[in-house]
Image (cartoon, rainbow, N blue to C red; front, side, top):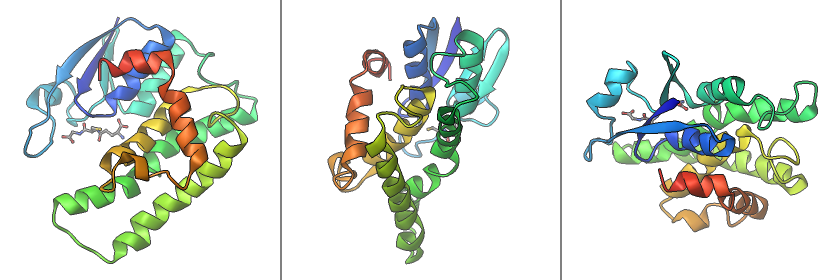
Length: 207
Ligand SMILES: N[C@@H](CCC(=O)N[C@@H](CS)C(=O)NCC(=O)O)C(=O)O
């Protein structure tokens, strides 16, 4: 049994989705955000000293960081079905996007929202955040025009990592979710393909 510490509207969605894909038996411990600050409640800090979601507990281990949790669960439960073989080109794409989804993509997507919430206006925003996101979207559009999933023809855990970040961009957009990828039809189709997966829909009920 895996215990998923789930903070509302958070990256722990990725872990619930992964468990549904792999048929891992899990329980959810729900944590709330402070409605004013959006910060996680003390209950989450009691499990993870960094106060961040997702966190899981499994066989006495406490593990945080969504990409690390995904890799851990794949190794513990089903190494092969959602992770390409290590001697393939697909594995390189898998690794790149498993990490880039957090390490490269998240900051420019979150920055405008965080600066807006803090009342910070800067002419550097278009230079950094907007340019960075559009560069990423253009690159992804070219990749996803050639294949259905980010690591080749098969769905992988990198799609879970990446699509959460793209959906986060949609949910944060002041223009509304449907406007973000209007110039990027392959990204739009990619997201629709993922959202139609049975495991995603089962997970959505728990988010
Ligand atoms: N890179 C980390 C990011 C974790 C993170 O920032 N989680 C957010 C929710 S998406 C959180 O716990 N926020 C609550 C807070 O900071 O108080 C991961 O992928 O797990």
